[in-house]
Length: 275
Ligand SMILES: Nc1ncnc2c1ncn2[C@@H]1O[C@H](COP(=O)(O)OP(=O)(O)OP(=O)(O)O)[C@@H](O)[C@H]1O
Image (tube, rainbow, N blue to C red; front, side, top):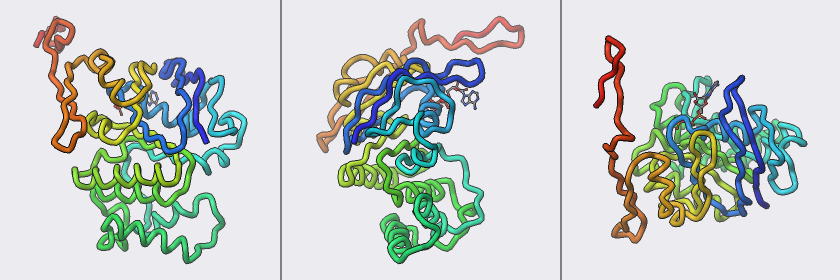
């Protein structure tokens, strides 16, 4: 199983958002972090790859299936897309929400295995005390955990996870990323996760894809990309890659206050104030 993208373009109206996106072939078990500044186009890329936006592309292949030549239902049975946290307003309990995700591409009937799989995830993520609660009565972090369980209960070939841990505390964040990485390796799934925390990206991802202003500026092994200088030029910051006491990379960053980063705040007279 492989995933690759050739020459993808995507517009919102007459605004070009993604330009000539190429993703080199990703193999089963790949855990990839999609990084890039705000508004770079990461969410748009996920929606495009999930088949939820009109695109032009030479090819978007998952194994031998081409997105533009298959049905949306067939594509979405193999691809699990988790959008950024938006707030779940469904009138369902946590348990029902997770069970429902399991049912998305199977028959209407609920088997003992489906119930057991939902219960196992609730137990693994210590959600027992909120399993009976309505999803719209939870905190942002609790809702995000339920959404992650919805993703984990699926068995896709490709995960597209848009900032899946943005609302989680550090303990939960590590727990979730560890579980996602484990599932990726054990099931031979391909996982692409967007994230802003570069240290966590470096800790978990074996590859980084850097998106900047709608274009991919780098794809490669995590260490190679971190050392290449592309992070500095993409974000306009200085970084240093250190090693933690656990032998893992830590990204130390420094704000650049040089001429290029002068921030101009518009004043009442319209002339602007430099900071
Ligand atoms: N529905 C939409 N209609 C028009 N423009 C949009 C729409 N959604 C996003 N955009 C624009 O597309 C660009 C890319 O947005 P996108 O949400 O993909 O960025 P992102 O990299 O995910 O950002 P962030 O890290 O801030 O979440 C932005 O300029 C945004 O304003």
